[in-house]
Amino acid sequence: MELSEDPDLQPILFGLFLSMYLVTLLGNLFIILSVSSDSHLHTPMYFFLSNLSLADICFISTTVPKMLANIQTHSRAISYVGCLTQMSLFIIFACMDDMLLTVMAYDRFVAICQPLHYQVIMNPRLCGLLVLVSFFLGLLESLLHNLVGLPLTNSKSVEIANFFCEPSQVLSFSCSDTLTKNTVKCFVGAFYGFLPLSGICFSYYKIVSTILRIPSSSGKYKTFSTCGSHLSVVCLFYGTGIGVYLLSDQSSFNRKGALASVMYTVVTPMLNPFVYSLSNKDIKNALRRMHRRTV
Image (cartoon, rainbow, N blue to C red; front, top):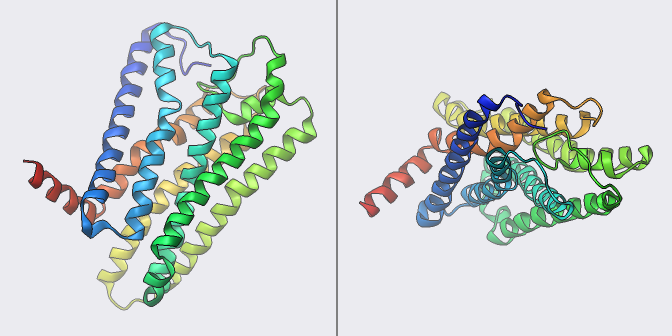
């Protein structure tokens, strides 16, 4: 499915998505370079942020370049191997985004609610382990969808009602057993969606409870601004991502569903650098220092 079949809109869509893609690449690269080059940012919070930026670059690169190529060539065809490859990479990096947002919420919970134990709990070994676990959980989810999606080889030609090989859409085609399909979707939705989201909600419940006990209004403002940026990304990513995965059905999926997919596959990775850099003094100071060193 195309976002629009109007030929006059294709150049506009191409320019729009190319611009969003380049902004995402540059913005997230700036964050990665800032964190890696500035010793002031060598903390767990910014370690997770740089990994989130890397995951965002890979995440958006699984869908947008192919969509841009389709617009240019006026062809929406993709091979079976290409579809499974795109779906696999998409799931891995979407899951990494998912889990890293949860890990970042836990990091803020420990920093605000248990500040005296923060350095001990969030040690480098645990931080590295949490990132690796996020990656391997993505591999497991990808493997699950691929095992269920292998019967798609029996289909000569199918049309996916989205601008990329969205996992739930591929699942609808490849799995004729409704029970198996619904079981997989419910398991993935619960384990990779609602469970991490519950952890985030619990973390921020405890964070807000702790913040309200802070006597200093400036301290409250600084903490709320830091956590508020994280929550805005969480709401956009989880809200549209879970909705598209669980509520989309091949027979009823339309352009509104495709637009919802754009929100978490393209818009969220693009917004992350702005959310974390424009509202974060440490990132802005690191960018200034990096600019002074290069000029």
